Amino acid sequence: MALRNHPSETPDIAALKLRATSLRRHMLAMASGQGAGYIGQGLGMADVLAALYFHELRHDPGDVTWAERDRFLLSTGHYSIALWAALAEAGVLPVAELSTYGADDSRLDMSTLDTTPGVEVIGGSLGHGLGQGVGQALGLRLDKSPARVFVELSDGEMQEGATWEAAMSASSFRLDNLVALIDCNGIQADGKVVLDMEPVADKWRAFGWETQEIDGNDMAAVVGALKAARAAGGKPHAIVLRTLPGRGVPTLETREKAHFVRVDPGEWNDLIREFEKEAANG
Amino acid sequence: MAERARTLAMGQDEATGAGRAGVDAPFGHALVEAAKSRPEIVGLTADLGKYTDILPYRDAHPDRFFNVGMAEQNLVAVAAGLARTGKIPFATTYGVFATRRAYDYIAIAVAHSRINVKIVAGLPGLTTGYGGTHQAIEDLALMRMVPDLVVIDPCDATDIRQATLAIAEHDGPVYMRLLRGKVPVVLDPKAYAFRIGKAAEIRTGGDVGIISTGLMTERAIDAAEALEKRGISAGVLHVPTIKPFDADAVAAFAAKVDRVVTAENHVVVGGLASLVAETLFEKGLVKPLTRIGIPDRYIECGSVPHLQAKYGLATERMVETIAKAA
Ligand SMILES: Cc1ncc(C[n+]2csc(CCOP(=O)(O)OP(=O)(O)O)c2C)c(N)n1
Image 1 (cartoon, chains in turn yellow, brown):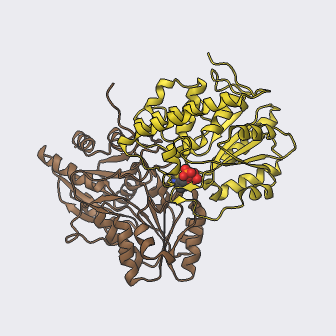
Image 2 (tube, helix red, strand yellow):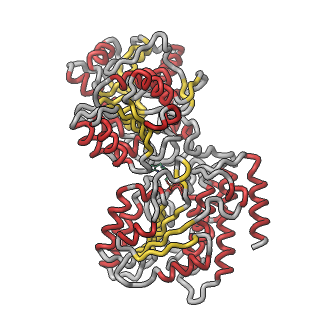
Image 3 (cartoon, protein in one colour):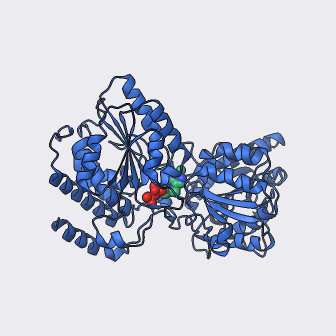
């Protein structure tokens, strides 16, 4: 039985990096079984998910309905591969079930439904996450709950008007129990991000958010930013994460940046070998 | 354990016809063709250019193509603005995002003003395994309730090409469902002519009359052939335009048969089945009606053939359903 997780006073960065490696290993196994999947995005977010599920979040893998749990809302349903890996590694889902990713009648779909344990909202219709996070943060504050709300969203989602509607309301409501984790991986469905969006961090600041900008693949930086985001200063917290799609597999890191990274069926074993070599070198 | 089928990646062909020749990206190529006589055409998408077959147009007219990013409300608003300056905007996204997220913009900025905007909507009905967020199961119902909007559900590559050319010439707002990638040819381009608001009788039969729209017409034709072998004579009326609805053709077709069957790649409430029932009742024509379509519920994720078979849209399942009813 997995124990409740809570932030450690002395986070073990090396151990968290090993967790991230483990998440990447799960994801590569899932994607190679599925034949596609959003492996680029998942590998890019592995460090952040490891830092959340094995350090920052107060959660109980044995009771995903625990009222005082911190909520993690994955707005980008297509990143489900990363969430399934994290939930399995944390003990919410059986690791053996990961091989069903994307298969008919599996709970581990290519997008997220809130009927799968550990999923807080239905993702996939992009732009839904942050507003629902605002509502949950308001509700928890009304209940005087110590729980906080973490919402992952993508750079593409910053093009949806609803994201900014939510952002403006969160700062107006002074929701310091809300943390937005914005995955700026530089890609969207049509390829490289299609609009001029910089400076992203300044936009969040202008909307009244306490904003940090970090390398989302640097574990110490991620852990440090999450700690800073605990501050109760009356402002919601934004962490702009610069992540590298395909992180951990050199071939994928350098391949053409695409929403669906191209992988030939016979290529997975080489990629996995490459990943293991990289992981062994730390 | 038997290997289970998996959800296909976005962009892979999911709706291709059984054993029929296909045409690549018929919408995008037809748009390029239409732009030859209609230079006012402009193309727009909301971060789904790759996935809505509009890239041939972008490549031919890069200066007249605008990707507004993933922002469907803005997509429709910008298209409306372009139309106000005399352009003919073709705006693409998935049906779910056009109809659910941008409904107000379609209703007011486009339809209320009868603005000349064409919305082209991918992943109609059950043509994706990405679940309820991506399956446009109720878009026809939502769109047919919008006054002055023309609503089209093409069957195949022939329909898509001809409908694209026709709506480019039509001065007014249009919502058209898209079949993308390699799209089968079902209707003979030499014999068939798409006309806005007109149904086409593809096959005559006396026992059962299948009234179908969109990709279900292909299955209706195949099902009718299979039923013939079982001694059931089935006609097929293809109704590519949901609005304005060809009530006279539907009534005339229904009058000839003992039982009416509707077949739509859409939830069975509010779409073709409802339209047919309203039409026949209004004409005082009462016939037993079998509704083939997506049940009134959200559909899970999965491989498209699995889902279509499970929910009765596959040809073999249609044959069973109709044979049982007839
Ligand atoms: C509202 C909405 N519009 C369009 C889509 C189709 N879509 C799926 S992923 C995606 C790209 C969004 O950008 P981002 O999340 O930054 O992409 P990634 O980093 O995964 O490439 C799009 C347009 C969607 N799921 N939801």
